[in-house]
Amino acid sequence: MADSNASEPVVIGVDYGTLSGRAVVVRVRDGAELGSAVHEYPHAVLDTALPDGTPLPPDWALQVPADYVEVLQRAVPAAVEAAGVDPADVVGVGIDFTACTMVPVLADGTPLNELPEYAGRPHSYVKLWKHHAAQGQADRITDLAAERNEPWLGRYGGMISSEWQFAKGLQLLEEDRELYDRMDRFVEAADWIVERLGGVAVRNACTAGYKGIRQDGAYPSHEFLAGLNPDFADFADTKLAGPIADLGTAAGRLTAEAAAWTGLPEGIAVAVGNVDAHVTVPAADAVAPGTMVAVMGTSTCHVLNADRFAEVPGMCGAVDGGITAGYWGYEAGQSGVGDIFGWFVERFAPAELRDRASAEGRSIHEVLTELAGAEPVGASGLIALDWESGNRSVLVDHELSGVIVGLTLATRPEQVYRALIEATAFGTRKIVETYVASGIPVDEFVAAGGLVKNTFLMQIYSDVLRMPISVIGSDQGPALGAAIHAAVAAGAHPDVATAASQMGRRIRDAFRPDETRAAAYDRLYAEYTALHDHFGRGGNDVMHRLAALKREAYASRGAAAPEAGIELPA
Image (cartoon, rainbow, N blue to C red; front, side, top):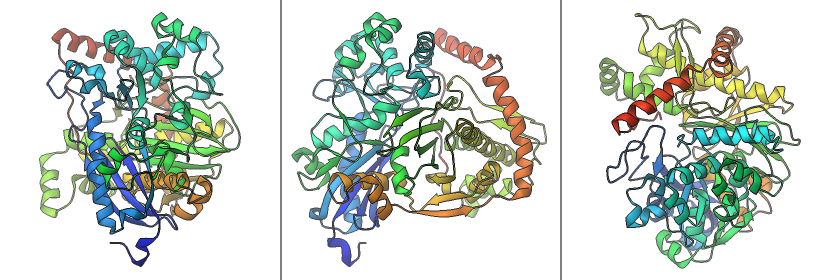
């Protein structure tokens, strides 16, 4: 419950994750988190079938936009109640979202899946960030940009991702032309929910720059887009039309309808939307150049500010002002991290370990972590690649897949679990080294997100990186960051950097590397690099051939590949 300062101005940050939305009430003066609430999406992720049973092909990941509205209706009022504050004290609301998560809508913002005639059409639904079925379109965008020497390609590490706006839009055009024509706008979910709150359609500068290939005030040219498909030439002018708004500004004012949903005062500031990882930077008070923030959950996004521009191979983007005004914002990421650990536990943890976890009142992740930590580095004889959900950086190829080398009949589950943790740490080291080699310093590493609670995992990361790791001083980093932007949009602080210094926080050097373990991990990392380059750069395209065979096999059956939801680690 709130203390005697509850009558002070407060703001609300709403963090839209992959499986749920969380609302947090934050005091403007010092960033104190007074109350929170979570609402899980009723439909979760649609990766095997639509709600009506229509099957989905492999590599699809969709969501239902009405689930996002339910977060406003359920989580926001519950957070205010938990905080014990007077709703009249709320001066602003801000949101962050997964990205690139795209909603096809009519001119008035109605999602296409809400039209009865389109409820059974996959392309009418939200394409979640981890929808990777547009890899072929992404490859064509990259190839044509390289062929034409497009100046913007280098700002995205030389490759365009299947997760982004243009690849997903081109897939929609080429696979369901009727829906593409019916769609008036293709909108980031962050901007769509802000429009639902504030009544104004604006696109945030963050996702437009990183996910929308918008550089120096312009999208790719008509000529370039026509080279992909003649009917795609006007995509940016029509489907992505709308003003671009700077981060930390007000997109609009809370409408009467949204006030009724949330119980908040009509007319308060609604901040411009943002991306979950990027908005975490001010929450950790980490806006200074050279401070990398890794938001570690189902996936990991690595973001940092720099005072210079450089082309960094395989990065997700460099955008002027993309994170904080006045700096170049850089983004990289790993498509699977917590998802990988959850997949292993769901599919492969034996019954005896599940029984033990149940008897001890612990999660299976806790039991596996304890067992995995009992051996020295390298004792398992295993090395793995962290590509079970493809590679976002530095190879930018979502048709790459996982590898575990060294399995024997004596291999135990906890050894595989540890090898997977180590693989994600090696993937992060590859990203950090690529930045540094390109002239972008990484002076401090700050961890945020749900995986920070796993101290064994965090120590492995520190040993592998050979760096101290600072930890954000909040369990709700993205929501706190969204609240910081709301405070600036409401005029309570002059800019994001100032608000971050008063509302954000981190615990410096919470984990420090051990030299003995770090030296052992150097040897394992060399093996990881050899595998990474062999399958990712060495011309061995077996993973692509296997992916093609999978698609052909399921196409011949007229069914989707068998995928199911997984338990995520705490």
